[in-house]
Structure formats: structure tokens, C-alpha cells
Image (cartoon, rainbow, N blue to C red; front, top):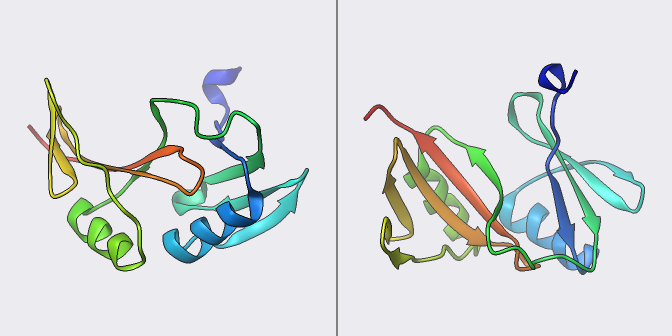
Length: 127
């Protein structure tokens, strides 16, 4: 049953070499395996993500994946030091301050990868 199975996020990319450089050098992911024309990256807690070539890369207007982190401010600072640029939003129900939105029980920051995919880091907190 699916409710008992792990789910694996897929990240579509237009240029695999460019995306690998972004995810490995700027984000800091380490490739586990080149597989089926893409790359598998291990993440925390036994999770992993599969990056694969796709003509649909960067076309979604919504977040592709979230990393669940302990401290959003520290992660934003670390990623910025590696060259990651965070999005700034100011719309009804969502406003970022220095790249971080607070509300709904979480602090969240969004960035676009080298392919235009919207990625996020989030820290849950008690309301």
C-alpha cells in the first residue's frame, strides 16, 4: 500500500551538468549514484532525491520540494555564502523578510535552482 511506502521527490532539470554543479557545489549534496540518465542524492534521515533530465524543468509555479531543517536562519546564511539567492515575496498571506516567511507554524525560505525549479527550506515551530 502506498501509505506504507516511502515517496521520493524527483527534480526535473534541463541541463544535467549545470544542475549537478548547482546541487553539488552550491547546495552541498553528494551524489550517491548515476542512474537512468539522472543522479540520486542522499539527504538526511535516509531520504533521497532523484534529479533527471526533462523538458518540463522549471515550469512549475509551485515549490518542487522542501527540506525540513532545524534552523532556517542558519541554513539561509550557509546557502547564501555558497551563492544561493533566496526569493522575496510580498503578497496577501505571504511576506518574506530577508528571504524568510514566518507563519502557519513554520519559517520558510524559497530559492530557485539553476533550472528554475522552486525549492524551499522549512523549520516547523510551535504556534
